[in-house]
Image (tube, rainbow, N blue to C red; front, top):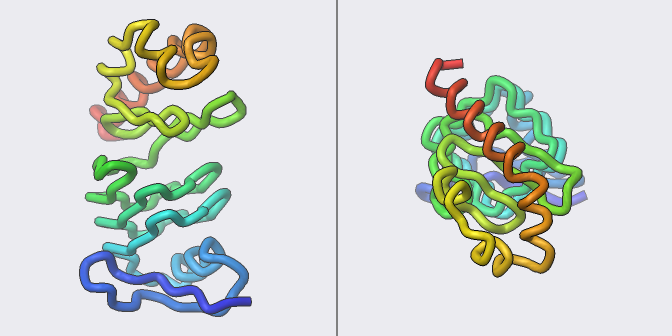
Length: 162
């Protein structure tokens, strides 16, 4: 057991603290208790399979945060930032089980450690893709249609206000 603290990215003030086994458990307890996590600095947190249903993560910093399998149902992600300051207004789609984890956000797609806009992914040449990683071109040839279709569908859902 260790003491885990969730601090504000704005002024470093303490938002929530708990002695427990992981930051994920601390964050889940904070959500369960109704703590206001507005502006929480969750940089680099491993939130794999975290249940963040209904969390207020308005303006939270999710830079380098692992959200694999996290339940963000009803979470308020208004002005939250993920990756290189990419705004996150809606729960992202997270796909795993391929060579690369895929995160489809409001305006960007992150595949493995590469994050670009939908339009950029769509326009990359085979040469550019092959320079990203060993085996990337073969993977992209198989998954490009699926990833871009899911991204487009996600953007359409957002536009409809779903």
